[in-house]
Length: 220
Image 1 (tube, rainbow, N blue to C red):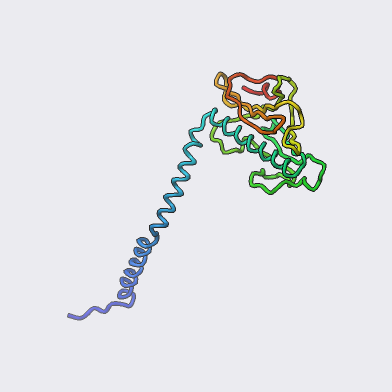
Image 2: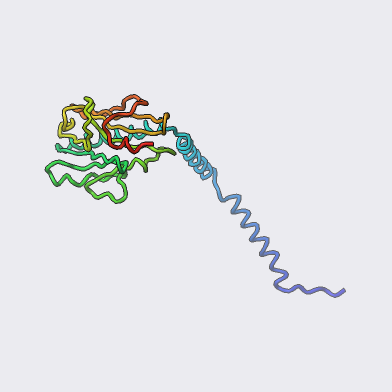
């Protein structure tokens, strides 16, 4: 019987194919080390832990979270005033649902604020804007209502200035009001700033709306 002569392509292709297949399988089996797998699992666990409270946040949780952010920013402004021996101001802008930190003292060299990762896009070196709508507090909506004196005055405050001693520029304590929810489920919370020390704390949650704030008229 005559021998069949195989072409070069017929003899080499199976061998090449086997080598390529073996190399690919080897790469797949040896591509991930135990350490790499553990790192991926750890990262997924962290992301899951962050996502669960984000998805289950309630209006009360959101109010509390935003109030804590404001307390932190007040502490920051107060500490800047004390450490630099000057004045720093929080300007409240309820219509834009935000507030801005600036230096309001006479030393123009302090107008440039320290570098901070919390600045909003578009901020200049002389301002730091906190946009409540952009805070990672979950679904829902928290509204900055404004501020007023804790003594019961109906005069609305648009700014809060901290002096070199840490206190505020007005003699009365200040209440910064926030709200979230709708209808009968709407709730309110106030950040109380001590006039003498400038230290802020969060008042208990309430279902009673404050008075004398223009932003209340736009609530639904």
